[in-house]
Amino acid sequence: MQVQIAISLNLAEPLTYSVPESVSEHMGLGSRVVVPIGNRLETGWIVCLSSNYSGRTRPLAGWIRDTFRLSPVYLKFVREASRRFLLAPGILLDAALSPRRRNRRQVRMVVDGKPGPALTALNLKGVKETGRPLPLEFAVYSRNLKDPVNFFPRMETGAGFSERLILDYQRCPHYQVIVDSCLKKGFSALLLTPDTRSAEELGSRMTGTVAYHSSLPVARREDIWTRAVSGEPLAVAGGQSALMLPFSRLGVVVVEQPSAWQSRPGVREMEPGPELARLRAAVQRIPFVQGDHTYPLAAFRRRAFVTVDDRLNEKKVETEIIPLPPGSPGIPQTLLQRISEHLDDGRRVLVMVNRLQGKDYLFCPHCRQIARCPHCRTIILPGSGPELTETCPNCGGAWKSEHTCNQCKKERVRVPRGNLKSLCDQVQKRILGEKPPIVSAESDPGVLASAASPQGCRVVMGTWVVLRPEFRHVFTAIIYYRPESDFHFTEYDAAEQIQAVVGRMREWVAPGGQVDVFSAFHFHYGLRLLRSQEEFLERESKFRRWFNLPPHADLFDLVFREPSARKAAASMRLARKQIGERMIVLETRLESRTPKYGKISGLMRVSGSISALRLTGIPNQRDVRVIRKR
Image 1 (cartoon, helix red, strand yellow):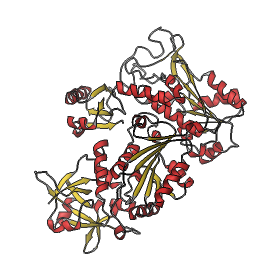
Image 2 (image 1 turned 90 degrees about the vertical axis):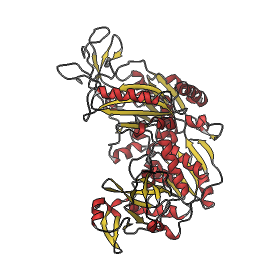
Image 3 (image 1 turned 180 degrees about the horizontal axis):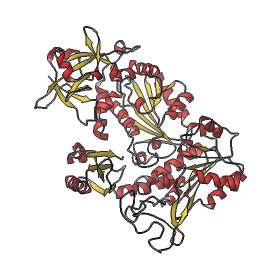
Image 4 (image 1 turned 135 degrees about the horizontal axis):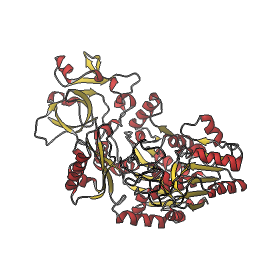
């Protein structure tokens, strides 16, 4: 008998193993097993009881005695998720386990009915030396491990999939109505949040809702997991761990702030939480609800199929975009003037700047240009290059002089960057006369509590950490300085991300407050359309369609790591031939000219579908890393 097993490793496809008929009664679809990978022993899941593989197969090393099994509906959801988002199915299935079952050190070999050596201390050679016939019996030995055998029902599907978008600054009352209706019918509700604090906030503000995340004690998570698996009507709020809970009766999926999942500073890998939640609702045929402070472009594109409840106009928030001249050095006087105006009007001001403390940069007062590398356009920091040769630390390219402008040949001046430290000094000297508090991720809890108190300083400065539940409705004016320092203007979704962050500030400011954005970003004219989201999204949708960018297509970064730049370029040329006309190659470049950990990295950004990328065979190559951007 041959079965397909999704191994708990970063493998895109299940592998085929042989199972003796004598032990097939102890395992079935959705059960856990132990398989050999070389001489290693790894856990895995049986995802299919048949296989078309005709080559040589290896036998199972063992099976894990556990009455908990995943249902076919859950396996279908994981199978679709792994195909659509290039995720490892075995790792996704492991996320459905309770904390104690997931601990590999608790999985032990059964010897004469008693716990033997742990799985982590075994390998295939050692197992064969015991003389016992394969597959062996394993079990999870842990204190207070509850067995869901007596009350684990079959996972049920709903009557149909529907999609709804709630646009409001106060969404908890809407969620409460949805959750109460679901629990009354005997079904559970899943509320997906972008971070742990949002999950705790929903759990405290909504009756009948519990938070579930990795920061909770193991006993608490084990109890919530058992209640969800047993079929008890339960409303759970959390992140990825809550999303993968194997609810036996799930009635609705709610995603809180889907735009917040994308609004992380800098270029990072895509977090597919909201899309995974939508896929799970579609597979289980249950309602899917999104709640946000802005209109996501993906939902706007599906607006013909989405029911939209727009109540944003009930809270009047004035928003103004103040464009900064390109190349303006230091801290602009208009920013200090705006802080003084808000204080004169009796408002409490929050200033958000991405940089906590940055280095000075070189500026040409005649050309009004910041010094950049002529090859990779990276900002040149004073003294960043070697002492003897003027070379870029990023790309290795050479330039003539660090202190002389390339265009006018005049001397550059050293200008401090606009960061929280320098801005704090200016506010202390010119406005307040005292040092305003600075809130960051490293701040002491006492500083956070003092800044969130209504009796605190009239001006508070901070990084992204200020957009947390403690600061909601504490300030009557919020100033966002240089959003382009958070989102690089060359990124395809920079305008949408800035628009989402500004929308989040409009939710955080007190009723009747004001949000000001100081930006030299070339999309600031689009930001003026914040009062007309339909026009803004129409413009963004056209832009994405012209260049075949998300949400009209998927975007991938293919990273090639080779020992030399010549080999990296050759690998990218071969990849371009493999892609052919299946996808659109947007960018091809070397990330650096100097080796890092002995390898040179080449980047190729392509746009198209995941199925087209699979046909090229590139994701299966060893030295190629595929990063899905959207």
